Amino acid sequence: MKPKNILLVEDDAIIASGLVYALEQEGYSVVHCKSVSEAKSAMVNAVFDLAILDMQLPDGTGFEVREVLKDKSTAVIFLTVVDDEGNIVRAFEDGADDYITKPFRLRELLARIKRILTTQQRGIGSSVMLALGGITIDTAAGKAYIDGELLDLTALEYRLLLTFASNKGQILTRSRILESIWDSAGNFVEDNTLTVYIKRLREKLGGAANIETVRGLGYRAD
Image (cartoon, rainbow, N blue to C red; front, side, top):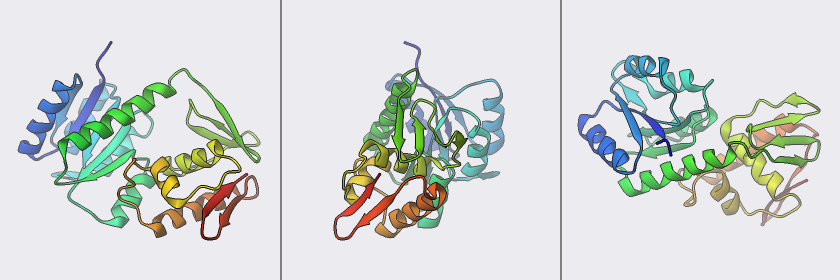
């Protein structure tokens, strides 16, 4: 099986060398870049399954690298010392698959990488159509439609919609929702953050689907 290609953009030589070694030991093919400009050059002639992006780089930010990757089927993990809710929310709105703060546990990072790549692989060639109210979801393409019109959703909003559609009519607790749209430990989430995302999703869906707040229990969608 062809190894998964990973782009690592990290200017800290010690962190980078350790990560490259660990990733290669796991069987991944790794390209390491130390700046935004190096990363952009690397992306010209290569396709990556996953990008691990340091947020703060010598010539810019990880968001600039993410911008180039938006038109590519590349999963993204932000790796940063910036443990700020605003940056975290922005990262997920920008389509990130995960956000990990330094210092981090190597085994945890490797587990998250494996989870993301496994989920990505399962989506290839296995299109499943889900429906919620007047919304149709193509899980292989990662897209949702209302009456044939593509919905403009962030990655996290899409995962939130997918969670509701996969559990249509069921009451979902906040903790269960967080486990579905983030990681199994529910990291980097506060209750008010989830409330904000549900509010935004409701606005985008309009009357096409109903996401009901069940007081004291959670949410139910149909």
